[in-house]
Amino acid sequence: MATQGSAEKKPIVTTDSTVKIPKEISTELRTLAHDLSNSIETIMQACYLLNQSNLDETAKRWASMIDTGARDAAKINKEIRDVLRSKSQ
Image 1: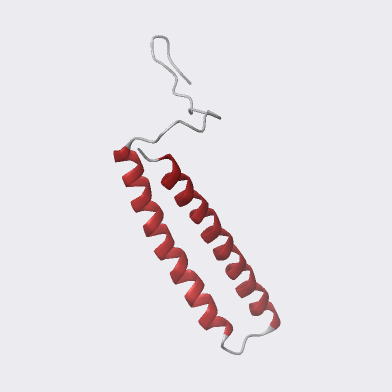
Image 2 (image 1 turned 180 degrees about the vertical axis):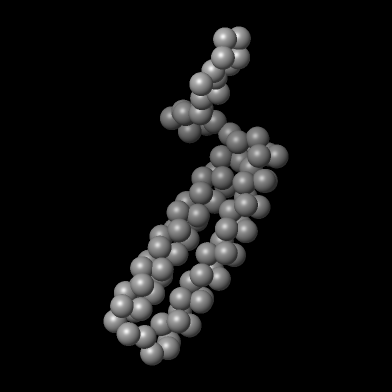
């Protein structure tokens, strides 16, 4: 809630494909996306190794959910990196 005299910050939403992300912000976001990729890769590798063991059906379903979620997160992160690449100054 904004108080009188203070400006309420709202997200910038634009459909202008020519808008560029400032270099320092893009660099920081790319670093974070890279670090996120490393964490997602760790989850995917651990899930792969988990699936190599003898799991009961319930554990297999949980492992499958983890794998699906990690793969979805990796795809989203790749899309973020693609946007950053195309919008960087």
